[in-house]
Length: 175
Image (cartoon, rainbow, N blue to C red):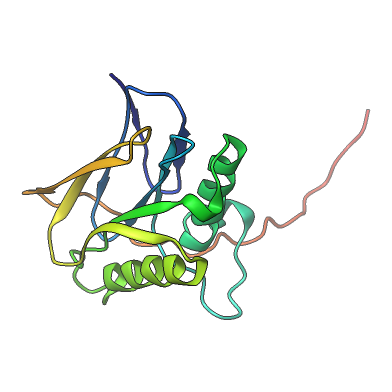
């Protein structure tokens, strides 16, 4: 079996059998989507649900947000023949394991559930919340997944502030 590991801000879409997509989660959330008719599936791994109201986010930083990650995953699957109406979901992660950061995990899980409800995507399995990290393995061709709790915390970095715009200055000498 071929393995495709993904990390924060990534996603993978597969339409062939004998492939496992995997990830490790703490407060992040992974959504596994599959179309049982087209035999296409994929997984994403996002750090935060959506940007705050009025928050300016660069295109690079958008990869960390579920709102962007979900659209990339769905569009990638549709590009391989999946039908939006056939999609089914498994949702994992959203643990509250980083002290001092509030309930980021709970917010991420709530975003994922709200997204599925808004888009009319049925949830087949959901393992979210708590204080344990998780290892998720997904067989996208047939929509099966396995989630195991991890004894050690998954190292996660608190969200970075957006980088400051580059300043232009200095002298340039043409010769």
